[in-house]
Every structure is written in C-alpha cells, then in structure tokens.
Figure 1 (cartoon, one colour):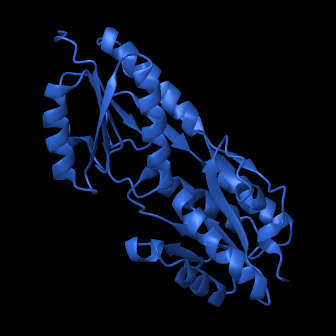
Figure 2: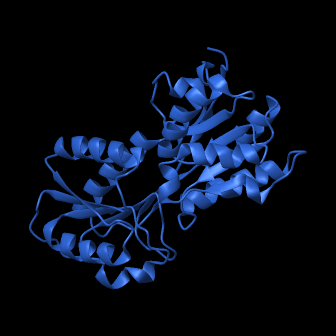
Amino acid sequence: MSKKDPQHTIGLILSNVTNDFSGYLIEWMEEQFAARGYQMIVTITNHSISSEREMLSRFGQLTDGILIISDAASYEDLADVIPEVPVIFLNRKPEGCPHTCILENNYSAVFQAVLSAAADGSERIGLVCSDTRFSTTRAIVDAYRKAMQSLPVGFHEEWICYAHDQMYDNPKQIVEMLSAQGCDTILAGTQTLTRRLWDHLLVYNHYAESPIRLIGFANKDSERPSILSFDVITQPLRELVELSVQQMIYLINKPDTPSRKYLLKGTFRKHSMDAIYVNEL
C-alpha cells in the first residue's frame, strides 16, 4: 500500500451520539490523538448505511486513517468504498470484515450479573436492550437467555423489552411493562438506558410497594455515587480508546501490517450503596 502525504487528521464515523458511550469516546479520543499531533474529524450517520459509504469515501481523501462504529451487517455493504488509508472497526464487526477490529464483549459479565441477582433472591429479571442488529446487543441477549435458562424460574421471552427510540425517552413505560410481567429486577443493556432507568427508579422505589432492582452498564473507572448504588457491568472504554489510538498510529506508519481482532471484556461489579432500593422516605 502506497503512503500519501500525511494529513495529521483522523476520521471518526459514528452511527449516533445520543448515548453516553459515544460522548466519552469522542472526548477521550480527541485528547489522545491531540497529544500525538493529530486532529480528529467526527461525523454522524444516523444509522444510515448510505451515509457510512459517503463518509468512508470522503474521509479517505481527507484523513490518515478512519475509525468507525458501523451499522453494516455485512462487509459487502461497504467493501467498494473502503479507502486505502487504515480503517479500524470498533465495537461492531460486519460479517466478513477483513480489517482490524477492536470489539467489546460483555457475555460473561452479563451471565454473572444475572446469576448474582438470582443468588440474592431476585430471579424475575427483565432485560431492556437496544437494536439486536448489533453484535454487542446480541451477546447481551444470548448471555441473559442462557443465564435465565439455568435458573428455576426459567427464560421468558416476554421479559425482554426491545427499546425503540421513543421508549429510550420513556423509562416509566419500560418499568410499567416489565413490572406488569412480574419482574422484580431490570437489566439495562446500555449506559444510556441505565442512566434513564436509574433516574426513574430513584423516585419509583420510594413509593412502590415492591422496589425494583437495577443492573446497569457504566464505564470501568466511574465512581459516581449513582453507579455505586446498583450492580453494574463495567465497560472497558478507556482501554478501547487507548488501544484504538495505538493501533491507528501503528497502522499509519506500517500500513501493510496484517489485520487483527482484539476482544475487550466487560466485568461485573456489585453495588456498594443501597440508595436505589430504599422504599421509605
């Protein structure tokens, strides 16, 4: 692969920035690339494959390398517009992708979280998750299903709430749906869902006859008081950022390096405060 004149610019293509994960990702990446003399250009595709294709082509002319969280199910959807600059896929790997991928897998942590809640007496666990087109979501659903199947209460498909865009903004509706199914615990499958359900349950549990337990997602290094109030699956976002920056700089300087797949695993952490479970003012 021939090297073009350096642009000292990195392109970051995201499907959306409506979640907490994306906000931290942009902030920390810009900081680390700036320390190495690179600026970052960020674009949002709003889950449009055609926009992904357009920005891959455009960034191929403007940047030294591209980082992308893709909505594409298959690499064939993008193959003809992938530029010659290094491209690294983050968090989601389209089927057949031949490029370096840095992925997050929370299967073990979710499985452990479900079994831990059951051991504490909360077996009726509902799951709230996002789009199952994404491998990260599918891994969460699979781990939840397998863990529930191992419990006496068993797995119930109706205990899974697939939150569409409107429901993301309506945690009350999510809680009402799952509590109507008899769930005493909710596993929130993203950081954004976790934050919104936490805000609602903090009030709900003060007045509810039976408070609802929360299992959520958070960044690994977060020590916010709210995060300490419920069991969490901690995401290695800083590690993902650091590895992404290191690999991109390496590929810019050695573009013929064979592609690799990196898997970063989330971990389970039990709560150390009980504020969310108190149902008396």
